[in-house]
Length: 218
Image 1: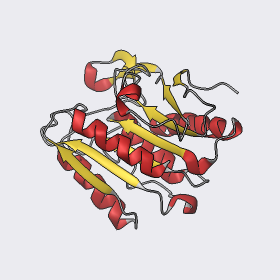
Image 2: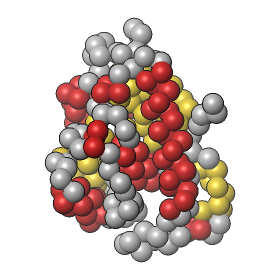
Image 3: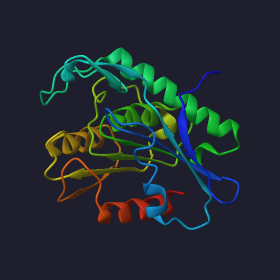
């Protein structure tokens, strides 16, 4: 099988858990690689980090410029009109990466899906529809693009979800992060939500919070 190309960061000991972390529009799998040492995770659990590269496609909101993207964004209104077929295609490709971690010997309940911005939208779709229970879903500065169309999997009805967002985000307004929380709550999930005095980025206090959350889930 052909998989998305990925940057992989292996732990010192053989991996017993995995985090699959999706980058945002125009970035690549190296974007969050430097965060791994900053998380200061203990040796146990031994966590493998997998950072996939999105394919390069024309992006309408950027004048049709070709860049790494999980799906095309057709306009930047608050409702974020997107190419639904492409987000589903990307979600299927990321689900294949989850399958691969299981084939490598990682229990599905020790696999976390994470995503920043556009990558977070894909992470929502993958994690909530995946047919085996996962360890958690972590979404940074993003929105629930498929919230009205997703068919949730019974296996992940109780999945731990943590949403992080910047109060001053000019790219993905915090209102979209809060809307995601409301959608999830209405669907029966119990998402945690935390905001930070930052823009469309990651800040030191958030990195500390992410580390603690990962240690709890894994």
